[in-house]
Length: 135
Image 1 (tube, rainbow, N blue to C red):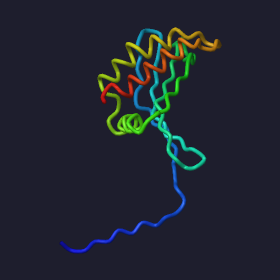
Image 2: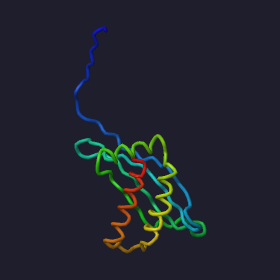
Image 3: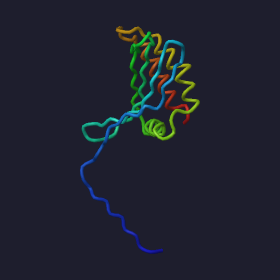
Image 4: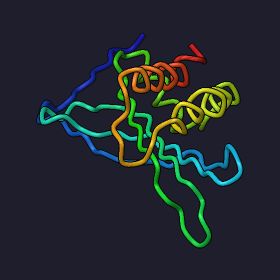
């Protein structure tokens, strides 16, 4: 086998944030759901992967924002699952969890009122299940 060499220049880390809208749907009449994958960056230029959704109530001639939820991956496995949504989109299993668990939990929140601890826990668990359902 011939000899090989690999040369990598060492320099400052680079992280490029982005937002990709991966899904828009109406889970129920009068509502709209937008799902995004975000990559943000720490001050040390490490990537942070997030699954984000926004719930809107549809009124005549306007979309009224009701709730914004951002789930940050807590492990390398969750990061990889969120990254896969960039190239593969939302799977049918993930969509089922979004519609059957995340949407009802988000719909319970009242605009302008902070969520209760129980509501936050329920939403966090449902979002974690979206990320982990394929694992």
